[in-house]
Amino acid sequence: MKKIELLAPAGNMEKLRMAVLYGADAVYLAGEKFGLRTASDNFTFEEMKEAVDFAHKRGVKVYLTMNIIPHNDDLKDAGSFVERAAATGIDAVIVSDPGMLSIIKRTAPGLGIHVSTQANITNTESVKFWHSVGASRVVLARELSLADIRQIRDNCTEDMELEAFVHGAMCISYSGRCLLSNYMVGRDANMGDCAQPCRWKYHLVEEKRPGEYFPIQEDSRGTFIFNSKDLCMIRHIPELISSGVTSFKIEGRVKSSFYVATVVKAYRDAIDAYYVDNESYTIDEKWFEEISKVSNRDFTTGFFFKKPGPEDHNYKTSSYIRNYDFVGVVKGYDNENKMVIIEQRNRFRLGDTIEVMPPKGQVFEFVVNEMYDNEGNAIEVAPHPKMVVRIPMEPLPDDAILRIDK
Image (cartoon, rainbow, N blue to C red):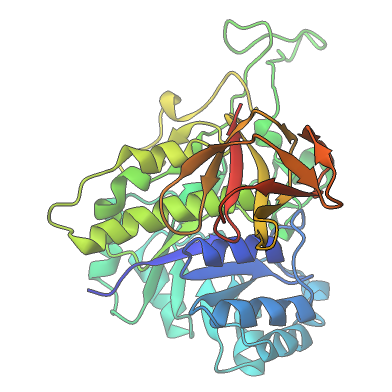
């Protein structure tokens, strides 16, 4: 059988590297215009070319997001942007607007076109329409069940690819069409600048009692009435594959490289285990445990099995659960002095037990018994972001993530 694609977010070059090295089959990124994540670093054309070269050398595809909902002024330089982007070697462009699709077809006719979840694709006829105008893939709306996806797959041609989100933040509005951000703070969600007012704390005000604020439930701090838990389908790989989905998409271009590496590796291991022996496949809870080590809002299976209920939302807080700190990345080995070279990301010190998550293989631990700065001075703590730290020990895999249980 054709293996499912694992598609990962790449908010910048480091995140792209982590996605590729930790097992993604494809990544999606944005240029400096037309993408829906203005909060991520995004890529210049030069960086995009570097990213494509890095990914392609390792057999990984690169998709460019151009999925804003544009006005006329936004389209003025879309053609030249597409032309320059296509020259970097990207494999496909993700769009949500028919006008943008038309520009891409005229400008770069050989480029793959994927239709974003922003297009709210929830039925077979919509999929057939997008296929008829030149799209090779659609990103299905998060509001679909597995049964809905199976029905779409059974009624569309095999060459039409179906992509579905399997992990990440859930939007409380219909596939991103929320107007709260525009209305409350003047930041356009459909142009990539959502302020996430769905995560804010709300109280109830009765029309004839202005200034009197009532908790919506019995909690004097108020309630987060729009705050969905994060989507997580790591325990349901067989059901997803049997639904006919072509690509598993992970949300999170604004998330950290630690998040990207951890989530991609967990899904990579789970998917690979399924293809080794799908008949006797069983869920390994360590995959879920690994995912739980990155920041999250607790987890839900979204709409895949039923319509979400109260248990799929967090009404008490919008704060993330953070059980582990990302403390460093392995950058090499000093053979002469037998020391691992680490780029620090968060504070750690002598005596700490550090978990090592390599790009391939099992997680393991070591205790920091001694360490040195880059000038060779013995230190007790690594307090400065991105400082180079050297630890005497056997080699660790390059680009391994180091983390500490909080």
